[in-house]
Image 1: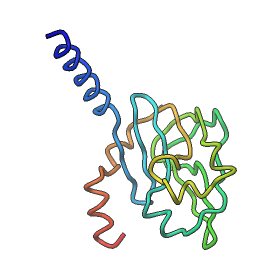
Image 2: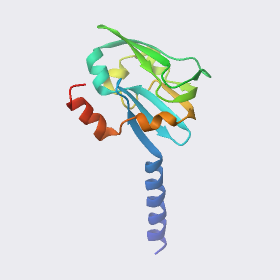
Image 3: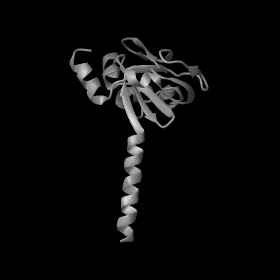
Image 4: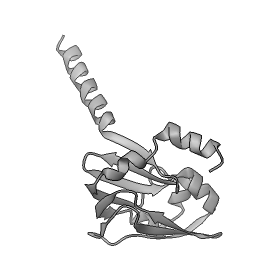
Length: 144
């Protein structure tokens, strides 16, 4: 009985955590993973495939305060340089320093280990303009 109760509590906590993590996408092919009052940002798998082999990532400055729509980083590949736009307002709390030595992580794990920065959310009003995974997939299917 105690084991079942503990299992139920753990499952409830797990499901509660999963609901807090929300992944959103932009029309310019950035992803945003929101976790409470923080969010991580990176480029989508579609974007990294279009860029080709990533050779350099310019990371933002720590403590930089960004408004929605401002450039947060740039990603350079053998084909082109792409700007990464921050869709939400926030203050940079962490950057993925692994990308300085291994920018190819953006290619191999663009929507996980290839995150660019983590920010403290200061303006969530842009959330309503972002797409969930299904809407983003439909956007891509329409030829984006």
